[in-house]
Image 1 (cartoon, rainbow, N blue to C red):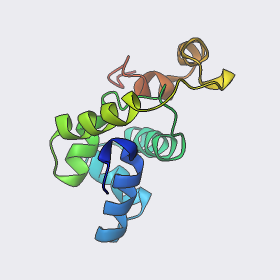
Image 2 (image 1 turned 90 degrees about the vertical axis):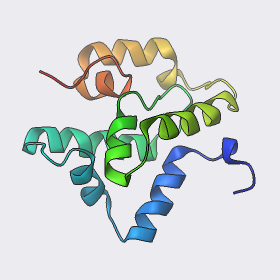
Image 3 (image 1 turned 60 degrees about the vertical axis):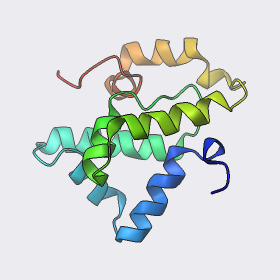
Length: 123
């Protein structure tokens, strides 16, 4: 890891998961230990989305606290790593990842609203 700013937080999370022997289900459970089934499902979907979609328009949002809880880290550390990576990326050219498209989708998609950091997850 010679240049941490070029490494997406998802790669760091996945490496730590392998080291600890955790799968995505285990991480989602640890992100919010007192979550009910609905919240756990949202956490799992958000985790899956974040680990798979490596676009600079997708931000950690409030998931930094949940990742920190799962891995015993500081939320500022997670957010800082992600922001460093984002600052090194060229603008996303995919129409589906434009800020406008993400905002339009967020109006109809509760999960994406959480990922964009515009909701605390309360229904």
